[in-house]
Image 1 (cartoon, rainbow, N blue to C red):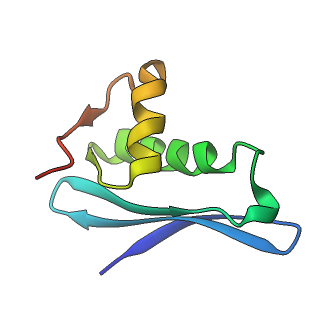
Image 2: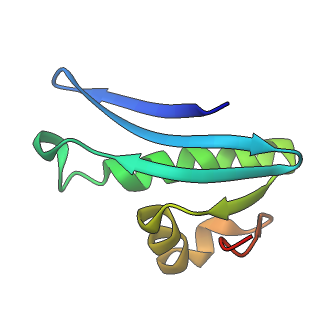
Length: 88
């Protein structure tokens, strides 16, 4: 079963779809409508996932290419969070 983080702006919904797998949060898809592009909303969605992982002691598994790229570019935001290989 999947769940998602969402941000709604100007009537458009951006989402980061994830599923919980034991003590892992698997990030599977980030979708940001073109109308919301360039506002950093995708990054804000990944930050929500990081906050959940920190609060619940979860390991992040970034299968989504956007989330994986954001995580690689923002190691400072990941203090105290474990990242697992997305190929698992």
